[in-house]
Image (tube, rainbow, N blue to C red; front, top):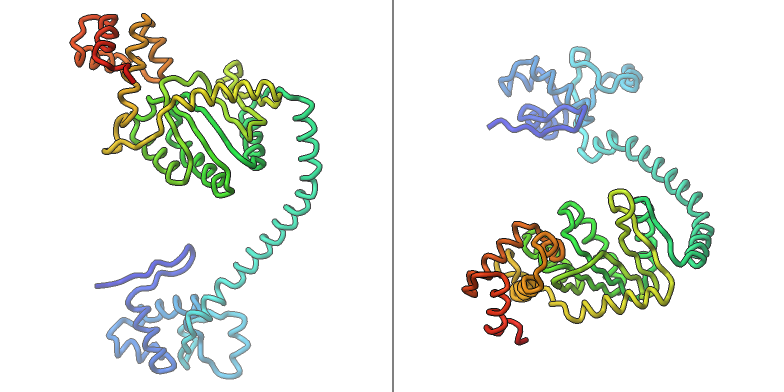
Length: 355
């Protein structure tokens, strides 16, 4: 079977004929194209082409008279028609060094220049940090209207956290954002920081979210789910809270809060939700609500009893209206209820709320 070793961009591929010629040169110490053509039974034109490829890759070098050595420096590839003495094999290590050496030297040059520029600019970092800390202390409530500003602020706070990051996320995050979030989680936990995160029960209906939360808990993060999370909030060391600002364009803005009383108030509210939330356990099949199913059904029954409209109830539980109505239908069927209000009464008599 004809085998071909693909070459990098701009380099010839290596096939069976190249391998046979290179082996011939290694075994005999030199290669005579005409003799190789007769012994291998290959056309001389094919031999010449393969030799050119091997010379270009510096696996062969022309063997010439002493008075022709100066020509080798000018044209190392040469031309088979001009070489009467044959070719000498070189080791792949030497050939690779000859080919890649100049490229690697150029990469090192750029790397040194990048480090020089980085060091030059980073000399201003202490000034930036001092100014930022001073600004934050003087502005205990800061409106972050641009998404890039939100991200950079979160990155700085995350880098400076010492004890804990605590968060609540009311909505299902997009799947493409989870890997980035997982990397940040790993970095924080690797520094010995505790991470606690709250999600609504509804996110558990999505298999990719189950997989993500399983990875988070494997890293050491503490994850719980609850029926309702009013808004997104992230706490850094109980000193700073960052909450979503829905009034900005696209709802991408945030408010960074460092006022001690306000942060304490928000944190105690978060702690209350955390205490009543359920620890995340992945569903046996990786799909479904797992241990949170009964809690979710109780939350739905409570909303049915309150008379809340479907649209508002679905929004409160962070699920689609169709999903909410499907849950309602299943609950009424399980309880044998003919009305939504009756479902609440039957659920209580059946002991759904005894816990």
